[in-house]
Length: 388
Image (tube, rainbow, N blue to C red):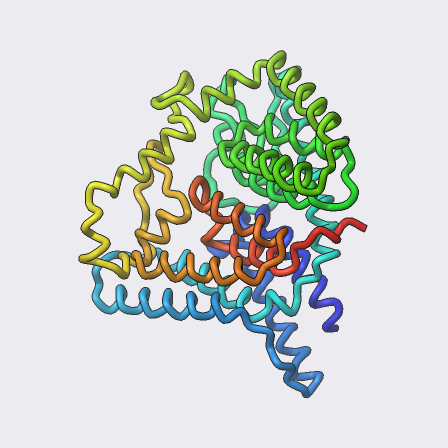
């Protein structure tokens, strides 16, 4: 059974990004599946009648204890209403990852599944956009028999109007797709074998999604590929085909009007034509909302606990900002020190992967919910020998 449990753990960690927004009642589907997995895991331990030495991630465990102490203190002092559902879910996945991530994730299987889902979701997002452009029909990528975290209909979720339609494939929103596919593309570029068709498919999918996070990762991928794979390893023969692919995709994007939508979504400093703020505007505004009170670092170094952030379309709080608000400068410093300790002992692929997580934490939010479960599990075994 141990063999099967490891495979199930790997599948859940890879599928977490698009299972986390499905709910059964008020509980995320991914959380229910993980509880079932834990029950069978304990049952298997009892059947073996032998307790194996756990391979615990000490850094995550320390972070987990800090968050529990912080939340308990905030609760006892009744200083603010905490989001207990989100807090419990986050603590649960940190605990699972700290105790089980190193010993249950199978890197080869995880890589193959990640590749499969990245390719399939990219094909589907292109189908979604093609059908919308030709017929005006929106194809939903959501399972119809499960509730989601959203209450709006598909049209409102995936596009605010006909000029702002942004497909999201099987994910909750375009940024989730862009993050998932962009992160895989980074790992894929550093493997020994690269299929140009797959690279083109993933890049075009990110372009079509018009995701700020996706474009940030794509830019990061291209820069690192140029600096490391081409320059250090002298793979100059790959510069020409990669350049041709990029030029062709840019030509397609310009002729299909995608470039205007990209600039509209990412760069405008105020409301765009659809009445929705741009990606850059949201992120800057979220940061500026709290910077006038920077003396709060000294007066409240432990943060305010995981409270309900302002639900305002003009604000976006990135992962690092949320950590600062929730757990103070002490919590944020602890997280960064853990990442630095990982970086010191990591191979060069893991170092790149950690830099990507840090970059995303400045523009997106890979740090909360079930996100650590997927990100950190894949991080433990990231290398350049996964493509078989």
